[in-house]
Image (cartoon, rainbow, N blue to C red; front, side, top):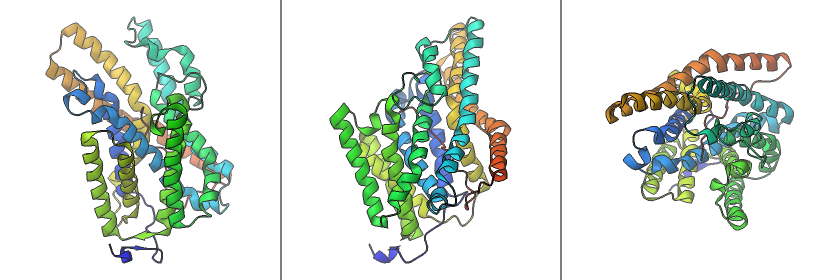
Length: 385
């Protein structure tokens, strides 16, 4: 491969809305919905189609955590590193991006359970709605060894873990800025491999299978890997055509790896290459539709579990009462997936975006600076791995 395709002399591709990174955010958010809904059909998709629908949770988690580190590094790295945004303002901005929607959906689920119980419709899995598990989840403490946090809107464990990553971000940034491009890349890969080996040695799990109660330990190495990829991307120019071909090859490699087994490390490498390639392809014709879809992806993550519980609470009663056929059950399953997407769009435009507009106005009023890219990089997705 000619080294002219990779250079430290050319200006690197800036991050921008409406391109492949945004498209990936929406695609992965939709796959998360399929992952959470896959077991609710007449036959689980993991049995009817392929086991990847069940084990794919760890893939989507890896993508989500790496992508979060990558995007935040590229959007906020310069401002935080140069002192134009304080660590406190960065942390506050990130927390305020996720907490309002999290609390709204968590309390909505509480109301749903209370109302259905009052109507005489008990949850099919009452262990998932134990009241002693709720406080740690609402307070986003469930990823730090605090008792509780299981059940309810369970995928929010990754939001809890990311809050800790946000707190560490400025100090990780300082360390990475002292390294060169290739040194940073080696550090990110090495940090993950060392963390993985330590988890195997100490608790008998790979890092991506750490229990939900220690989600921060699971998230941080992947978040650091994403930051390292971003620092590399800001220092090393990759020819767009090469980036495109590498992205396609990495996607095919990921598909082949998953066709046979979990192949965790190979899959992780392919995901990293996909993100790195997507960020290296210039956005010459930004798509407003893709940008909007990406902005809604966080709402897709935060709301899909609540929609799933509500939708199939009704569907399961209807199936039992009217002895619905399997094709009708599949139609209702598909309707649930579409409802989850539609609800996310409605929640984003009617509630979440309006709240975030007020928060941004508050930041401007107190002298906060908007990032130069104009990209609000909230965690798009999360999954229950």
